Length: 388
Ligand SMILES: Cc1cc2nc3c(=O)[nH]c(=O)nc-3n(C[C@H](O)[C@H](O)[C@H](O)COP(=O)(O)OP(=O)(O)OC[C@H]3O[C@@H](n4cnc5c(N)ncnc54)[C@H](O)[C@@H]3O)c2cc1C
Image 1 (cartoon, protein in one colour):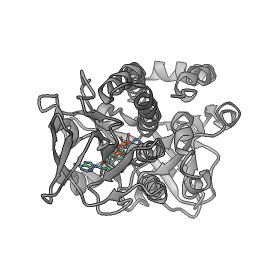
Image 2 (cartoon, rainbow, N blue to C red):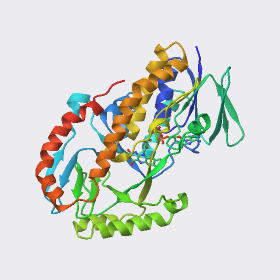
Image 3 (cartoon, rainbow, N blue to C red):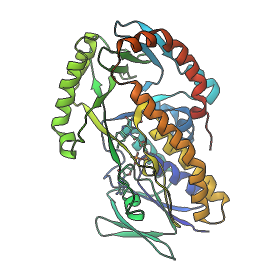
Image 4 (cartoon, rainbow, N blue to C red):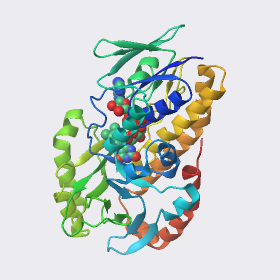
């Protein structure tokens, strides 16, 4: 057995994969660039039943539901009239859990804690810079000059994967897709009771969505179109004010509540969205990519984290059944790639539909959205009902 597994990245997929491989008899070690379990990055994300059911095997639902919002949605037109609702309570019967929104850093923290509690070592402050593969094994080099060697290595190190760059130096780099996923947290006395659903309004010049968490905090999100890719420095500095001012302008004729929420937000979240050009291969003989490292998707249908979680179950099964790691990695890619690519395409379509409305489209949307939403529940089954 190729027993020693090195995992790079303790985001979402890394720790969950580590726990499953350790239970399957592998000797696992995880290496993470961050200095601690869950460095705060501000963003929040959706977990849908397909991913949530994997995570709930290792993290109790009560932990996730502390500091969370519901995933149901109510849709409104610019006049504030409810035009449709997509509630998630039906999911509990079908999938035994319901979509929810959680803070990304809390998810990282919960996944890391679960791994540490299962005695899977997680080494923090270890930034992978290079991977060398030989006939005998695979060695990872870290920015502090240290290294670790194993039989196989899994790159769970996200969109800008150093593992991917190292094993496929010629692969196309992630492409900025002109959208910045934005949002934030705010508190307003008039809006402090938890809501049953995300309030999603198709405003005059763009959509605005908000919900209120179990802690009485408003979580809002929006899309910001920006043709030029922001630099890292801009993301940390001027971009947030640029977005705040622009969103206030976009929503000036919509419900004044939106502007109050935006103004009450101390730190606007700005998360530039990148597409990873399709990779011909996700693996070599001893190295395999999972999660965003293999297939990042835009956040429009909230599938990034859930796809990474699905990957983990599938890869563990493939490793258990195939004769060699390479055959397992090839089976993993064969099983996962068609689904992942279909979801990436759906996310792009939803992203386009959220863009600026025109009057005729708006008239039809207000009248037909209810039917589409009902049809959507059936249509979403291929996403939410998936089991590896
Ligand atoms: C800032 C940010 C905000 C996001 N917001 C949303 C959102 O609002 N909605 C949504 O659906 N999706 C969002 N996503 C995407 C979502 O988080 C991912 O789809 C999901 O986390 C994928 O899980 P993963 O485990 O593959 O990667 P990640 O969760 O990104 O984990 C990768 C881990 O690898 C570590 N790492 C990176 N490079 C190295 C290295 N060289 N050496 C060692 N470790 C390394 C990182 O620190 C990280 O902990 C966001 C992503 C980012 C980066």
